[in-house]
Length: 101
Image (cartoon, rainbow, N blue to C red; front, top):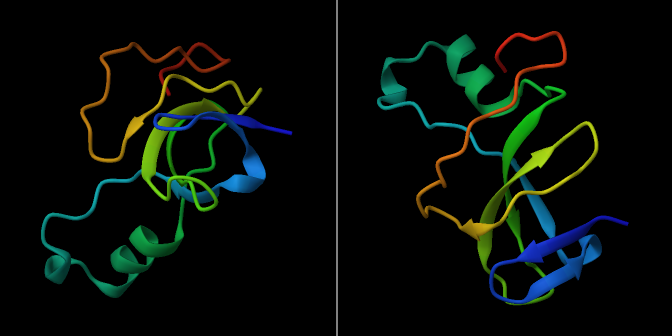
């Protein structure tokens, strides 16, 4: 079972949470997107094997949204922060083939 560190409640079991998926940047002007671009924004994710910034909701706890970085290869989780708070300055590791993520 995945243990998730809630910034408000501490370490908790995954069933207490609801995943909001990968944090992605919203288009600056959605009206300028064609249907294919809008569909890609809404439904398609990269699903990479690397460190990914995710948003989670503590549904059965404090009911707060927060973000953390999770390595999808081994489920290790970085320190958490409240949703919308500035991201800590860290360097992303290179992908397994040596390229940038």
